Picture 1 (cartoon, rainbow, N blue to C red):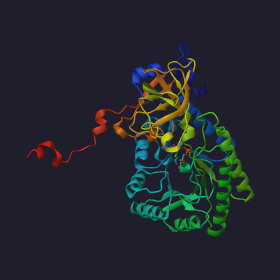
Picture 2: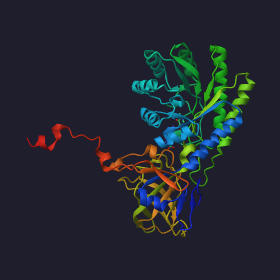
Picture 3: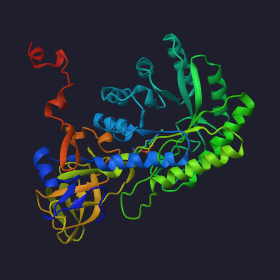
Picture 4: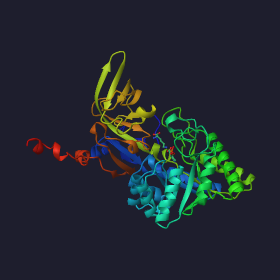
Length: 443
Ligand SMILES: Cc1ncc(COP(=O)(O)O)c(C=O)c1O
Ligand SMILES: N[C@@H](CCCC[NH3+])C(=O)O
């Protein structure tokens, strides 16, 4: 059994996270429940900051809030000295409501609306990562309307294939994101941006994908970006002050996943930057990164209650839990794999191989196939590990299932960070048009 962060099995054979017995958490907050190990999140943040400090380069570590955007998480990011990457008005609003310093917020996205851009301009956002030509000119015009000059990075597509799932690979030429480096679009974008009076070009951004275990892709991205920086300086006279290398650093979900320590990813990037830029006699730029998954992924655990089961002799035994693809769509979307234990009987002998099903009316609503467990009964608790990133963030109300609560645990204390949705929340935005109301139809 692989336990992350502060997770441990206590003398009652119960899973304990952040000093809290999960059976107590289930009684107090109900299930399904997302549990966040705050100490582990803070440790990950510190690992990034320390690794960059060791490099001697100027840096910003921007937590990619798409992985898990809630106000409590923004508060922790701020306390740890991180910046924040947001991709929508909703993520921006979350950060602002949490009091996150707006000058440390970077705004991403391949289709920012004029409303979103205006909201960010009014708030005084630190930097826009511009994705395409339409946005470039729209942003300049909207900034001009407000008499502002805004910092931008241009997102480039470096033409690097990251070894990961196709759906989360973004550095290849055939991608919806960014200006293509290979076909000259990136240079054209810089040329146009320099000429736009309300934009200040700080440099470029590249993000090659997510859940990456090797440093090779990052090194190749650095090579390409550095060559581009040198060409732009000699051809257009602009010196990049900032290079943003995105996120994508992998984590261990299951045995066989082989992520590197954070210090190694950062060391590879900063080492490659120093080598390339020194060789080119180019002033060392400030390096920004945007880790999401590696900041929160392994700090999250989802706790479920076992309900029904179905045994098909000689075929399979299904165990159903009170959540599923609505709180964790990743197995259905990416065939992602997870490890799990019976959290209230963690020391019991594993007696059977079962498959964990969710409660949606959907055959694909499966969380884990072929998991070794003790004989699970209704009312047992199942803990699925490594659900901190892209789980709550991607949760839905399919089948009108309510989204779970989120608690942060640390040193024996458990605090609610997001309330469980109520049935009223489910219908609060519904309206029955007057012509469909019973009173009207009766007439
Ligand atoms: C532009 C950008 N930055 C950062 C991230 C965060 O990636 P990860 O969660 O893999 O660190 C993503 C998601 O892949 C992204 O698209
Ligand atoms: N949602 C994806 C990651 C997307 C990364 C964002 N660009 C996942 O769960 O693995």
